[in-house]
Image 1 (cartoon, rainbow, N blue to C red):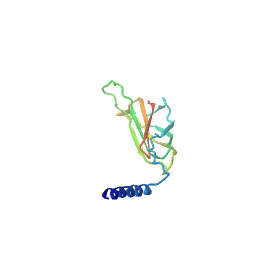
Image 2: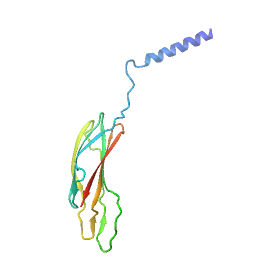
Image 3: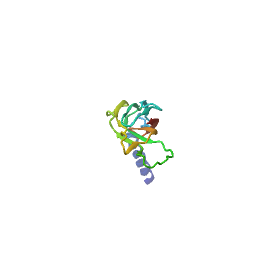
Length: 154
C-alpha cells in the first residue's frame, strides 16, 4: 500500500511539473555572432601631419545589438636612434571609448573628426612613422571584433 502511495505521489509530481512547462517554446539560443566593422577612413597607408586631425568614419553592425566601441592609436614598435640636442620625440597615442550607439540599433555609422595629432614645437615633436589605428566593437552579448589600419604620421 505504501508503495502505491509513493508511486501515485511521484506520478502526480511529474504531471504537475510537466503541466507548468511552457509548451512549444524553444530554449533561447545564445548570440555568438561577432559584430562587424567597416572602416572608410582612415585608409591603410594614409599619411597624416602633426598638428592635423585624423578623420574617422566607420559602419558598425551586428545581428542583434551594438553596445560599444573603442578607438586606439599607437606607434608601431621599431628601434629608435637617440640623438643629443634634438627636440624630444614623443609617440602619438589616442584612446577613445564610447557607448554612443543609438539604443537598440543593429547598424550605425560613426563619423568623428576630433582625433588631433599634437603639433610639433621647438622642444617636442610627434614621432614620425607607422601607427596602428585599432577599432574594437562589442555587441550586446559581449562578442567583440577588432580591426586595425596602419597609417603614417610625418
